[in-house]
Length: 345
Image 1: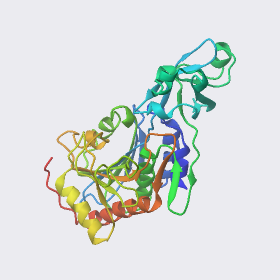
Image 2: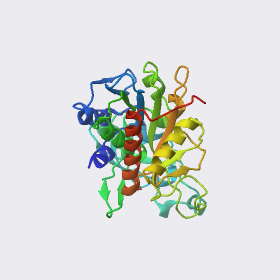
Image 3: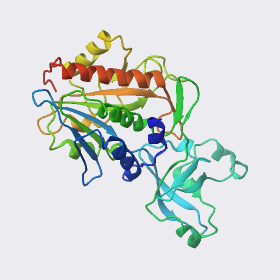
């Protein structure tokens, strides 16, 4: 399964090479141009009828992870988070480090050795380390080096006919959907942007789209699902199983209203379930894309994901399929010249 291959690939922010190579291989026979820019963004282009609008679709390749910052004399590895990593879930997790995928375990002082006050507080990053089984600093340096990145060693699997589990669904789910889009033909020009370093400040998307000047843009994402204990039902973010989520506002963008309405119109005509992403926190590459030059009408379509930014996330395959269907039907309408936009943002 394409999503599974993307999920298991390693691509922490700034080290997206494995993911980029996988995507390049998948799309090479379906696009007219493919290039990698100086930052590492993968930029693809499919030719089409020049009288039709040019669509840009973006998804980011990178995932959250860890970076090795020191190799201690006893062979243990100190690290810092790359992106928004929840330190509460790190201890005892299995990781792989660097290009050679050296296996390790995130360790901490055993609970038996902790004082009562220590047990009541989440462990801080500086209290954790990665243990690769090296007996000392010299042995560890033969396997890893400072600056290597580490990610969770999580295998993709299907839990039942509706649910899959894996890492990095933010945003390998978007990458998977974009690949599927590029393998189809709609007869309008389309740029497919697989961006880097989204998780550390939306750094890749802006330079990637700067010279492209599309008429409109979609950003495909995996987003937070909050249908779990201690979250107010239907009051925050998204719900698994209720279809693709449309952003109405977040910390980086208020989507183009007419573009958003066109997407809603398509969903309702095609009887595709959808929901609104109610949280206004955080942001996506849309925050950079829509500000390019004089501005690009942009909207965000997301797949709800439980336990995002963790070693193991879960998503509903019906949500995945209906998100694909919505993007597909929108593209069909665009190819027929049926999309009308007002540049209102």
